[in-house]
Length: 165
Image (cartoon, rainbow, N blue to C red; front, side, top):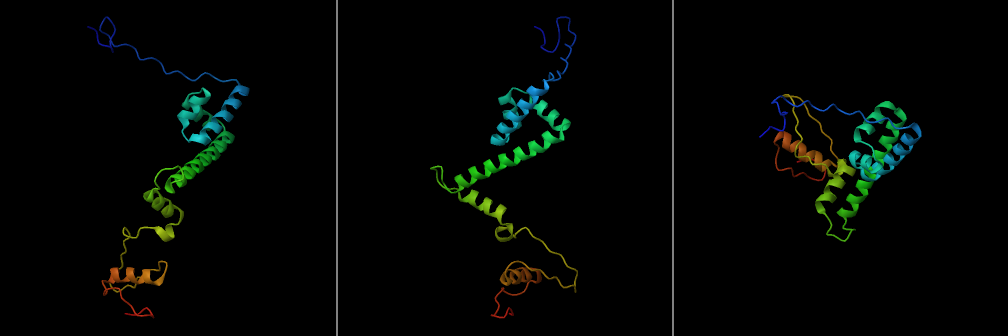
């Protein structure tokens, strides 16, 4: 029985040479680039869009490296594909496709859209040298007091109407 990596004499089989993609005529290349960009804008997946227009994905990378104009169009198509994803995520989050709305997806979308309101503060850390004053302003004053209390170890966070304990 022979090893698949060796020939009949027992010597290793030579590795096949890497093929360079065949050059595409200029007018055909431009058509393929446009078709690729349209497909890529819908999916955002290079390999799928390249296969749909009959080119290898490496060809797309070569186009990007060789043509600043194509690279700019590629980035625009990527932005379009992200918009398609966002639309789908919003529809799923709100249950517009007939399925149950996704609370988790809604949470992530709100955090991304308005991080100054929906951001998690649990991972924030602060350091100050003894005797230094640390001032932090976060949203509404009640949030700043809660953070100040956590830093200074002060009280239960209850304050009277003028912001004093």
